[in-house]
Every structure is written in structure tokens, then in C-alpha cells.
Image (cartoon, rainbow, N blue to C red):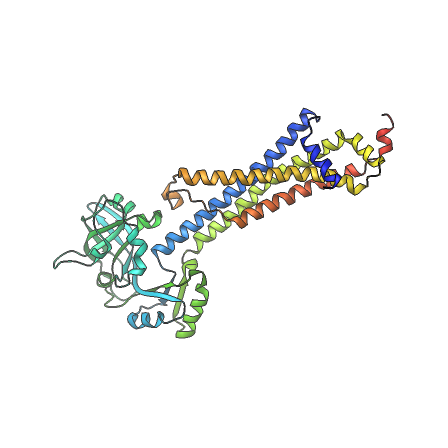
Amino acid sequence: MAYETLIGFRYLRTRKRSTFLSIITLISVVGVTLGVATLCVALSVMNGFQQELLERVIGINAHAMVTSRGSVFYDHVEMRDKLVKVKGVRSATPIVLAEALLSAGNRIVGVGIKGIDLRHPIHFEQLRRAKVPKTKGSLDELVPQKPGQLPGIAIGKALAEKLQVSSGDVISLVSPISFFGMGHSQASSRTFRVALIFKVGMHQYDSKFCFISISEAQKFFKLDSAANAIEILANDFRKLREVKNRIFQKFRQKYLQVRDWRQMNLNLFLAIQQNKLALGIVLLFIILVASLNIAGTLILMVLEKSKDIAILRAMGAKNNSIMTIFMTFGLYIGALGTMLGVTLGYMVCQLANRVGITLDASVYFIAKLPIKINPLEWVVVAVCALLISFLATIYPAIQASRQKPVEVLRYE
């Protein structure tokens, strides 16, 4: 070990320093620790939100949706058969998307309606798993099981509580507007039986979304046998861009539009990314403030150790060696604070996961605080903290190297 490094380390652990300087050093370490820990935890929480929302959005929807500009798919069966043959497409299913009013007694709520084809169950695995425990019914009951039985409807738990209904209750669906300008201007009304109550954990879906069979949706919205969209599941949702390009190359139809999960939820995920960036920048200032404490500690250390510096210079130590001693001392503070910060951040994340912090689903979309640790981001935070700590040592180290030993030792 070089003597500069050894002296810098001894300055950190020596007991001969003044109490005031020791307290300032401790404050510097604590400042870096809290800054690193806070930034790591905040980034993990934002990653958790993004991952949780992504899983729920993709789970309840599909990876991509194919629509026809200003029209519907009357040939959706043939269209689906062609789509599943595209490389990278795992499955496809026609759907009907629209809006309507749902009423139970004197309670009326505006909802989104999705008509689904149960012949393609792979698209609705997440919805089946989202069934509220200890409730009756199943997704298969969307289609009447007996002659004369009412068609079923699947609604979210928050919507069921708002309408004060449970499995098996009868509710009415009303569509007061025409559908896609197809000339059907009169209101449609149909009675449904609550076949399934689900809870996906996103308030937007649990309180505003309903599922019925595609045949009932076609009848209700007077679409004959048409579908207004086709949902796609890809083998890898991260490679949707290539899949979209293959679809356009295969069909070469200008009226065809393909939107992936990013485009369908652009505002949501863009807001998360922007908040994550803004939060990271703000919390980075905590580390910057802590680095100022490191600089202040080194300045006081230079004043206290001026005699030691003069002796070292008289013994032949060069300016670079003096700088290295104090830069090493500052880096030790930054490294110690960084290691403690990463450790503290990891402990906080594990504790939050174990305890399970509840959230207001109507505000945060999900009911439990999600945390996902990204090791690469934590490494970047640690490197940035060390870099900032290093930069904070430069000025005090330069001032220490510029001291003249003759002036310091003249009166000793």
C-alpha cells in the first residue's frame, strides 16, 4: 500500500482529531449514506410501479391491437388466421370495444365494454386468475349455459361495490349513442347476469371495465358478425416492433393500424419515466449537498494537519503526494457512505416488500407499494456518488499541496 493511501486512511480513524472535526466527518458520511439510500429506494419504487403496471396492463389486455381506420372487420376470422401465421405472433383473437352505461337499481355508471371470444382462452388467463376469492361464477358463464339463461358479464370488484351487486345479480347495459356512425342511432338496452367479479389490482380496470362474450357484444352494438379490433399476443412483447413491421409487410393495407401496449398506454408509462427522471435528479442533490460536507471536512482537516503537511514536504513529499493523501481521505468518506447507503437502501426495500405498504388504488392505480431492484441502476448511483465525492476533494487537496513548509514550521 502506498504511503499516501496509508496516511489518508489513518487520518480517517485517528482519535487525536478534534471533536468538531469528527462530528463534521460523521455528518458527511451520514449525508452520503442517506442520499444514496434514498435514491436507490426511489428508483426501485418507480421500477416497481412500471413493472407492476406493465404486467397488469398486458395481462388484462394484449401485446398489440390491430384496427381498421374508420371501419370494422367483417372478415375477422380470415384476418385472424393470417395474423397467427406472421412470425413472432403467438395468438390472435377478435374483440369488440365500446362504451356504455351499466345500471343496477337507481345506480348508473359509465363503463368500457369488451366483447371477447372464449375460444381463444390464452388471451384471458390473467382475467381468470383475477377472480375475487370466495365468489361464485367463472369466465365461461359469459355464454349462457342453459336455454333461457341470461348472458353473463364480468365486472371489477370496485365496480361491483359501486353498484352494490354480487355474483348472480342482474344488471342492465345501456348504449345511448350510435356505434361508429353506422346508422344505429336508437338506444340499445340488454339485461345481463353477473358471471364473474375480478380484481386485477388497477383501479382503472376494477372500476370502469366489463367483459361480455363477443357474440353478445355484436348483438348489443348491432355489428352483425363484425369485430372492431383484433388483439395479438407476441412470443416476446419486447420485440413488437419487428412483429408490427412484418404485419405491415404482409398486408400492405393503408387502412390497417397496429398499436402496441406502449402506444395504448403512452401517457401512463411516459409519466412514470418522467417522474423517475425528475425524482432521480432531485434526490441526486442530496448527494451533492453531502459532497459539500466532504469538501468542508477536508478544508478543516487541511487547517488542522498543516504541521503534518509541512513535515512531509520537508521530508521530500511532492505536491501530488499531498493531494493524494487528502483525496484518499475524502474518497474513504464517500466510499463508506456509498456502501452504507446501498446496504441501507437494500434493507429498506426488503422490509417494504415483507411488510407490504398499502396504497389508495384510486390514486396510484395499484393497491400495494411495488418495489423492483435494478442492480445496474444501483451500480450507476454508487459510481455517481463516488465520482461526486472525488470531485469534492479536488479543491481542498490542491490547497493542501500549495502550503509552504517554511512558513508553517517557522514558529514551531
